[in-house]
Image (cartoon, rainbow, N blue to C red; front, side):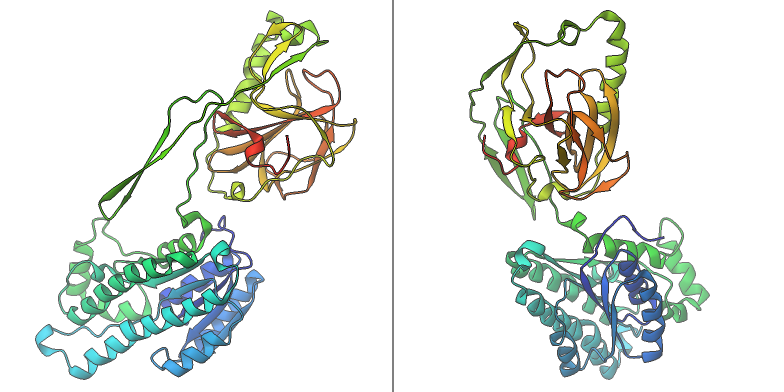
Length: 452
């Protein structure tokens, strides 16, 4: 199985050399992840077979019989596409010969296929990607299929070494030039993978023994190993994003150290002191302010459920989009950081935003997410939902009346997930929302487009 959890829906990928071997496996894996495909090969029979498999995943697939060494052919194919988001620059070959016996015609052919064609496909595809006005926002990916021979030397591989070392250099240069367009460029450098191209070399038992002897695991890579890496690199999970959050009482500055090519750059984010309001709430049941001992065990158990839901560290990227307010035209009655005085007694600060609302008012999901907790009766928070938005970012909805989703459900921004209530520690119908980065309590107003 490939990486089904990576959702590449609405992306379009161009895969060269897609009729057999690695290219075929990569195209099928991308289709399984929801990608629309443009596949290229010299053999129509192979393309038809691959296209038939791809369409089983209910994605679009166009195939083109094309020789990648023919510039005008490949230019016509690429320029005729509406959009290209991902390129798997896979077409390549090898003719093993001892350096002293390399035929000029073979050397020129390998350079034409492995180097010149790879350059042309990458350049034409990059130009097509850049045409899209939203490219800087949506990003693009070019994956050059390299080899371990782009990093080490090998017997009877001198020309192939030259090709793949060149591809490594090309990739590094491309990645710098295309970064401003938000186009990532990577190589994948497999060791020996059993493909139609390598099978003929592995018929030589002496050669096969030598190759396996150089692989610590003692086995060849599978096609799925490489295809899975392609799907990962094509996804948003490989874009290098990371998250950190600051709580209410953070005092020290944040120091980020960025390392690139051995050079370290220090980025300092200043923490500015913030003044917080004092909020007085009276009329609460005394047992909700100072709970009786008999409910301590219950509270401890419920807190563990909440902590567990907030400890999830998924690869989701839902947090990257702007959140929306959970209620329409609601009045904000409580804000993050306020020092709370409950029934005249100082208590912990308020770490959420309160929205006043009528009982039964529909509540909207503020962002795409996965339900990680759905409880109808927690002591303090009443009917409670927690959503995972990726990389430790979670939201919590509390004091609800009804819940319309279950743990494990995937919701979209704007979906109705429940209704306003007054459950748990509450003096009247309202919704309290929280935002966390793991255990760190964040200010929800930093991600929601609302006026406090």
